[in-house]
Amino acid sequence: MMDAKGYEVLRNPFLNKGTGFTLIERKALGLTGTLPSQVQTIDEQAEQAYQQFQSKTAPLEKRIFLMTLFNENITLFYHLMDQHVSEFMPIVYDPVVADSIEQYNDIYTNPQNATFLSVDKPEDIKQSLINAADGRDIKLIVVTDAEGILGMGDWGVNGVDIAVGKLMVYTAAAGIDPASVLPISIDAGTNNQALLENERYLGNKHARIAGDAYLEFIDQFVTAEQELFPESLLHWEDFGRANSQVILDKYKNKIATFNDDIQGTGMIVLAGVFGALNISKERLIDQTFVTFGAGTAGMGIVNQIFTELQEAGLSAKEAKKHFYLVDKQGLLFDDMSDLTVAQKPFTRTRDEFSHAEELTTLSAVVKEIKPTVLIGTSTQPGTFTEEIVKEMATHTARPIIFPLSNPTKLAEATAENLIKWTDGKALVATGIPAENVEYKGVTYKIGQGNNALIYPGLGFGLVASTAKLLTQKTISAAIHALGGLVDSDQEGAAVLPPVSNLTEFSQKIAEVTAQSVVNQGLNREKISDAKQAVRDVKWSANY
Ligand SMILES: NC(=O)c1ccc[n+]([C@@H]2O[C@H](COP(=O)([O-])OP(=O)(O)OC[C@H]3O[C@@H](n4cnc5c(N)ncnc54)[C@H](O)[C@@H]3O)[C@@H](O)[C@H]2O)c1
Ligand SMILES: O=C(O)C[C@H](O)C(=O)O
Ligand SMILES: [Mn+2]
Image (cartoon, rainbow, N blue to C red; front, top):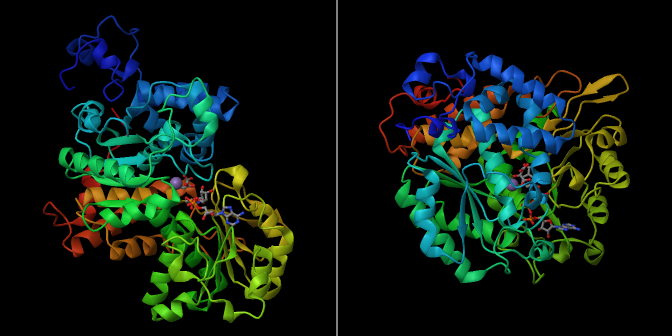
């Protein structure tokens, strides 16, 4: 790749600078005459590209423009994104990434250097990874099988865009070298009937392969991936409820890996709860949690808070009493036959209640339990109703309410309604970005309770410190790094720091993560100064 010449250089987005090539470079690379005579600085190029970006009105058009730019000139793309992080995040990532996944077949363009692995061709795994890496030294992989894309269900091969989007946030937020990353789609088939019937669908046109055959394919993938990129971090994204925890448990003590929906979400939500408690001046051990939607994310959140309650001195038995899980069945009881492995330890018994059989709705549970914290990862829009929220607010001075389901159309409530219904008392975080809420003369800032606020720093810290494993100790350290970054005394303060500071706090999370890895002796390479190690590998988007 480094010896590329002429159009090979211009067509390689990792190498291309377009009109940014100096005359000397043009001569050396055989580009003389292939570009107009003026040489532009990257800022001049960025200004022109931004103007073009702004001329598009539809969010999906904006996204297509940015993806085309990415495919042409990666350095310029990130230089521009650096200047407009808060504006670009919702376009390259959630929520607009959801539109691009839904319309993938119709707007298909060059797949951003992604790897496509087919469950029908296990023999191709290794060569596919080699082809897509194209000689690059891969340090970070985001892989999805797209069975649970955000809250939208199964999107088959279209889901590759979430892996691409997550990686773009990694580089924009934490500064991981884009040449060292690889997005991967595992095409295990799809159970999305509309896709199967769509003539333009680009993935395997058969039902999802499940069970042992599926897990065997995953294992072949992990083996090949580890063999080819032994120092890489493997990030799992948007797998289905039945597989996500199983896969994580299988590999978490063997390789550097994490599941973003389970662990990343657990981390950001606990950080948000801490932020809220800083404002209300209350203690974690005094909270009662109702989680609505006890799936991958919901149980990741419960487990993270459960761990923290024990850190705070509670026994496992005492800590469990703080949780009430609500899923499709209503409150989850130990006698139910359709519980997941993750749910089982946190169920309740019917004899705890005088009318257990009535606790089949969120409304009934909130009335009965009087929670202080309500978390939504249910994929069910509008389910945090005015009645439920007002009921909660009558028993709790500062109710903590996080409607986290993505994308926008699936959120359990809007921040604005939560502030109004509780007369400004609710401490709110939402999954997607939310505007400030003006209410009775106070400006309420709304934190974004999205794992994107934490996984880039965490992952980059692991890569920079050449971590062999991710431990609970490191996870806790990273969560606490995010605390104390919000001015909680200001009226209407947010529970999490703003996305406009994403690069700043991702750096801090990365440093704390790297330090924790080194403290535990989990680094592969010798590292004398963890902070310096993070600075050393940080990539910046300049020529
Ligand atoms: N903000 C974030 O950082 C973040 C992170 C991860 C997931 N999420 C969002 O959380 C949602 C869930 O994601 P997941 O990966 O956990 O999916 P999942 O499928 O694993 O879990 C969803 C759960 O909701 C339950 N559910 C469905 N209908 C319900 C109903 N009517 N009442 C109660 N429960 C119901 C399902 O049975 C399941 O247990 C998605 O919308 C996703 O976008 C947000
Ligand atoms: O992708 C996001 O916006 C967050 C999260 O990973 C999700 O699945 O919703
Ligand atoms: Mn996700």
